[in-house]
Amino acid sequence: MNHPAQRKPFRPSQVLDLSGQLRGADALHLHIRLEKLAQGSRHKTVYLNVHDVWSMDSAVLGVLVYMWRVFREHDKELVLLDPSPAVERILGSEELEGLFRICRADDNCISR
Image (cartoon, rainbow, N blue to C red; front, side, top):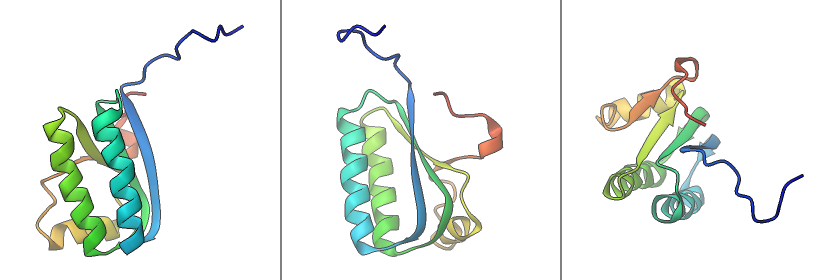
């Protein structure tokens, strides 16, 4: 039986799943969600599962780069989990492939 005052076990990371075609309005929603995690969450690492992302525009990419910096300023890490070929292509074309830590799903690098 759970007592109402009991806390759930702390997990040092969180995974956000992104998928499909990410465009303009998605950038705003992503920014808001990541900003809350950067500033208010106890999670030290946030993994963005981008395995099923097949397209993203410059607004979404800009949010990712900006939030990477915000996470660093808060001593946290924003990690790309299992990027799709499309995401890898986008990062490469913008010369950003070295900015984010990349974690493959089979690397067992997620601490939950």
